[in-house]
Amino acid sequence: MTSQVNEVLLRSLTPSVLGILVRRGADFAAAEDAVQDALVEAVRVWPADPPRDPKGWLVTVAWRRFLDATRADAARRRREDLVDEEPAPGSAPAVDDTLLLYFLCAHPSLTPSSAVALTLRAVGGLTTRQIAQAYLVPEATMAQRISRAKRTVSGVRFDQPGDVATVLRVLYLIFNEGYSSDVDLAAEAIRLTRQLAAAIDHPEVAGLLALMLLHHARRATRTAPDGSLVPLAEQDRGRWDTESIAEGVEILQAALARDRLGEFQAQAAIAALHADAPTAEETDWVQIVEWYDELARLTDSPVVRLNRAVAVGEADRPRAGLAALAALDDSLPRHAAVAAYLHERDGDLATAARLYAEAAQKAPNLAERDYLTRQAARLNARRCR
Amino acid sequence: MAKYLLLKHYRGAPASVNDVPMDQWTPEEISAHVQYMHDFAARLEGTGEFVDSQALAPEGTFVRYDGEGRPPVTDGPFAETKDLIAGWMVIDVDSYERAIELAGDLSAAPGAGGEPIHEWLEVRPFLAAPPTITE
Image (cartoon, rainbow over all chains, first blue to last red; front, side):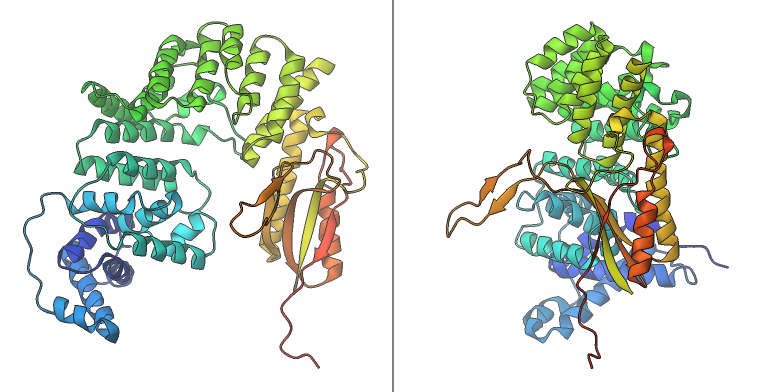
């Protein structure tokens, strides 16, 4: 018996194969379709007949598919003439193809959802069906989203890197989508960020990778067997993935040493301080508040200030946290949940219970709603006793 | 096979028999309720009758067209809205009787004191595509 195709290895070859086709003169949209066809073919053929040079095999098959598709389209005969000649190798690229693909798929002309879908397909090598399943939309809808995205970037020159921040935002979105389906988007985001970190030397890329690794390390402990949320303070720290934490911390330290702080490094630093505490009580909240101050300076985000209020409540007293909270707009998402938590810490259980119930009404997802309702119930039960 | 919508209301349905707000339950009662809902959906997936299940946030906005070149008019949320949908389950079953039976099961989800809520659920048939043979 032959082995299964190593899907991750196969998909890791996707961007460089696609880059080669584009360099040979294939337009991006057609080249991307051809590479997808080649991936499907590889899954079919490789188990019985593994190639000696997987990447070479993929390039050959994808190029043939591209030519077939181009020939089949009579309206594109002129392009056929162009590409049918044996392609010139082209001048050696100054910038890595994989890197250019990340920038293309996260191009500012794309909406976030389009950039996410295109990145997962063209860089990640996922099929449209897998991406559709991951985002719980019909396959036809996702196919349309991807082809529109490809059309949007078809005129973009494939030769110079853009702003790395746009790429990081897309990868962060993918990571944050969670674990709803068979496709593990968080693991995929880590793989793609790792691949990006290998292609470009940038402290914020390292910062994002560290952040993802540190969060991912806690993943198994974040939900109970029944699917309910387990807050950080109650997670079983013995089950955190120490290898992932060690790697995240090491990457973060190297990034911070370069003294070009950015928001992902600051977020990772906070995650590292949590990961570093043997028990919730030993958390270094004073340092965490300092990092939130940095983060607030870098992003000026009200959500950061909200999280900072929690940290202040821990580092100082709950009253100090409530004072920090008072300066913020109470229409902020999760404002009521934070207020409830701080009031409970301050011993005002009646107010806390009322706010938890209010927060549950505004919860953005079912898991959070159930968690907050349970918190309200816990306090109400305690007060009745 | 025919599809039915099992509709759950925040407001607008007659009061449940066991009508206690969820934040007055014990945490264990809430867990038991959530588990029941999971198990119910899993059972219908097992029988090949499950289509979809979604929950909605309580607050919504009314929107209407306001003429060429003008932004849509929005209104609400209205605190006094009488009928407020909380969520739904779509099932695909062989008969109306089966839809009623399943809605009854869903309404038996445990609430305060671990007792069934006896919540009123609304069962609405989908208007299907016309059949191939009509006479």
